Length: 256
Image (cartoon, rainbow, N blue to C red):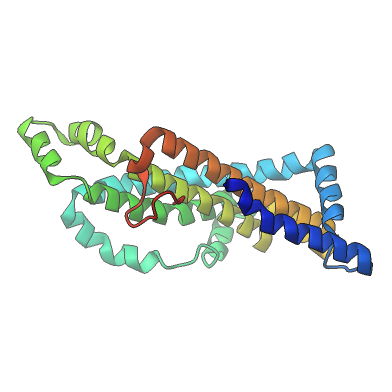
């Protein structure tokens, strides 16, 4: 049963609370679970949670739409053009391994601080999973379907809208879901490293002001947000596509 997965985390929380109360641990870097929950409720009650969460989600969503959309669009083109795939293989393989955080100084010089910096960095990070998985999905379409489209005299856009997208849509949605997880991770990372806004920045502010209970409360909200986004997209994937949306090699019954 699914609730059994909560036994170990719940036990760890109870043990941490018991140790804090029994030994009276006072620290500038640790906080008891009860203190973290009080701080989490305080962030929720005064509305500061919604302000920082809104900033992070806005940047993550903007970068996801721009970078993920561009990656899927290029994946469509490359998946249908082996010649173009060979021409772009070298630049793609050269740029893809660059960590998004490493290119942050470049975006800072171009965009300055704020939403544009964060959205640009998130877009760069989301572009690659969308492109790689999307291209694999397009390339994996049954060749006979494309032959049928040629026999029917469908043009380029007709093939894409009537054959390619319907056949590859389950895998394209998987690419979008994975890019969504990347978007939130990179958005928080940019805020921690450089950009003075959002949950990442508030996390570092709490750390530097020696408020561990607030720091862990924000960290808790980041985890809950990431889990909620992934759970919602995973539910949509299962409702829309069933097992057709699973990645090759995935364990049956396991989330991708």
